[in-house]
Length: 83
Image (cartoon, rainbow, N blue to C red; front, side, top):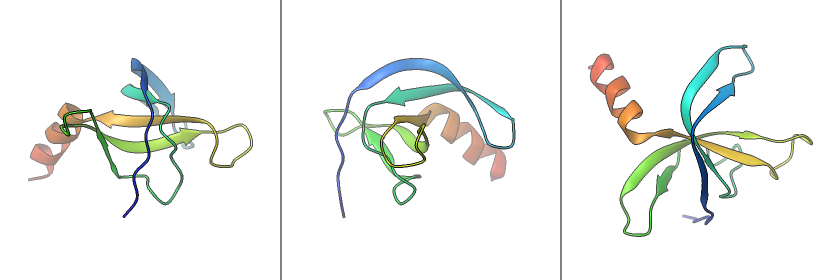
């Protein structure tokens, strides 16, 4: 198990997926993300889940860049639709 720390630097951002699809309302974070922890939880100081780490934007293709998380309310809606 590992933990990364960072700050939420923006809300309601848009992110273009590799497929070209636009993903709206993502949370921008400075937490270190990499392909191995995509899908991990983004939590606030009190331990409440506020998002699911989804993607990183990196000019070099490495682990340094801007992280993005899907807000938990959006994730809950998707889960309910799948059920």
